Length: 114
Length: 110
Image (tube, rainbow over all chains, first blue to last red; front, side):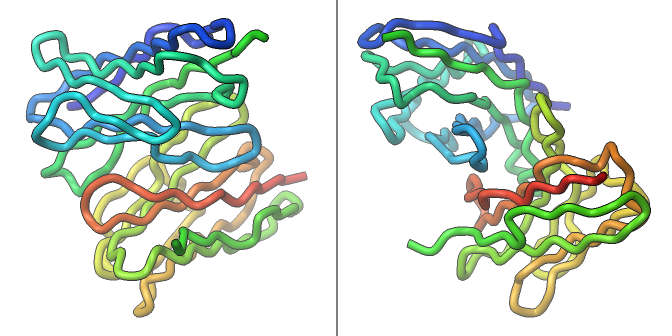
């Protein structure tokens, strides 16, 4: 069975500060890992994904995440927060063997202060 | 680039009515997924289809059914609607790695 834990339901940063959203997963097989963003009143949008290969994955809007197998983590970072980054972020895991059903974390709401 | 199209964007129904939500995947995507996101909740997987066959089933109520058609679009049929069915219903399509989500259909049951 797979699961995802996002640490912190709310994260608040100042504009220009580092964004760090934490995600830990459990999986019995090498997983596919994803970060999605949901802006108010919009659907989920894929930020980035890890399948195989390079463990540091770069996504849209300056976000990146690093797959650390030893720590079973896939934390999302951005060097400098922008007001437009305020949204809900979901970490997700899927089993490549299991029809790509995706297990989502509970989400972390990011607030950006001016 | 073409995205996943869902219709309608908004739907208001009364209790015990039926509703049909439609999802048009990205061209050449052969897999469609349906998710339900209740107010303040994370998305819950409902059901998926691969090559027009049901491939996986999640927490979909018996009152709901879905299918994928020959042109790969999918429809989620919901009967005997309840107030608790009010939610945002996402469709996603995939060609095998990751998803592209539609913008969702917001269903309100009154």
